Image 1 (cartoon, rainbow, N blue to C red):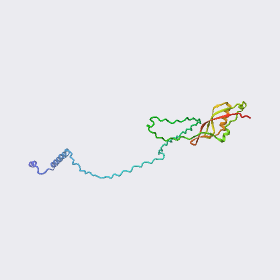
Image 2: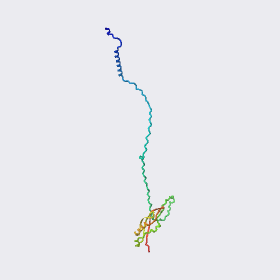
Image 3: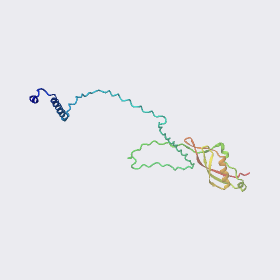
Image 4: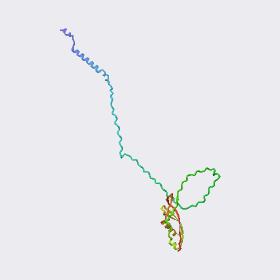
Amino acid sequence: MSQDRYHRPEGLQTGSFGVSLALTAAMVAGLIFAAPHVTGPPPETHLVIRNIDIPAPPPPDPKPLPTTAAIEHPVVVPTPVVHPTVSPDPILTTTAIPLGPVMPPVPGPSASASPIAEPTAAVPLPVLVDAAVDPRYAAALQPPYPAEERRAEHEGRVVVRVLIGVDGRVKQVERKSADSDAFFRETEKQALTKWRFKPATRDGIPVETWRTMSIRFLLQEG
């Protein structure tokens, strides 16, 4: 009986093996969780180049045409018209200036030595024709005799200066001398209403001119 108490059978004990396996597994798991997390190399990537067709840009928008309201018309400034001022023809007088004898020039000692000057082209002077009494109205030159001067048997003389227009009529009368006012009044009235002349001309064109006229008042006997 006592021999059987101390004798253990040889062979694998199932309970001890299970405990050992569990301890080993626990140690391996602790090592796994305690070790640093090591990751593998990153996956190899490949760069892919692809040509993308870029569409052509659209044509620019056409500029809008200006409307009739937007068109600016140039401002036209009218050019002022300048009319030339035509001065009236100068009044011609009929006073004649007597010319004296023309003496030939006396040649001096140096006259032969001086060069002879070439004659220059002379500018033609205008052709002036004085006014003349129209013979058709010659009988109307004598004014009527003033009644008061006739009754007083006065004779007299009147000198007037008249302005003759381009139509031959007298436009103005100026008194130069008169023996009485009655003689001048009759002469002035007759000149403005009855006297007619052929007007003076310059190069054939009628012009106004002054002329001096003398009128006598004489009493006729019988």
